[in-house]
Image (cartoon, rainbow, N blue to C red; front, side):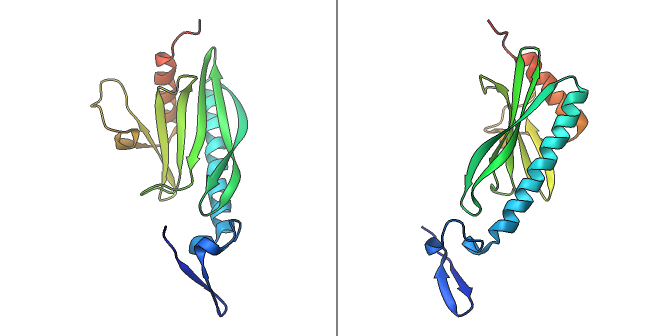
Length: 168
């Protein structure tokens, strides 16, 4: 277990002893980190919703709870996309990851077998997806990143739709 010491006035506090909802937990202003994370997510969901609706997908925003070691438990927006019998979910996974400021998955439902991941890097969303015919990589993170754009989103949604199993 990693401990860090914080100095608050003349008082030294180990971060492991701070309450989970402390705004100074792990030396990061958790309120600011939460606000920034939710801002990024709300902008992402809004943009994906707008583009998806242009591509004739119906959308519905839902929420889920995440638990983060710095900002604690919090609700995040998710987006369900549907076209005919094909459903895709845009789902936040983590506020931070190695070399990324956030991770959001985009996957075909209900099988979760066709997946793309979005990584927030330097304030920009990068889309990782393994297209058919490309070299196989150990994880989706190793797929060639593309900046998230209307065109890259449409290409991934089209590919996922094509790969969808027919509903029986």
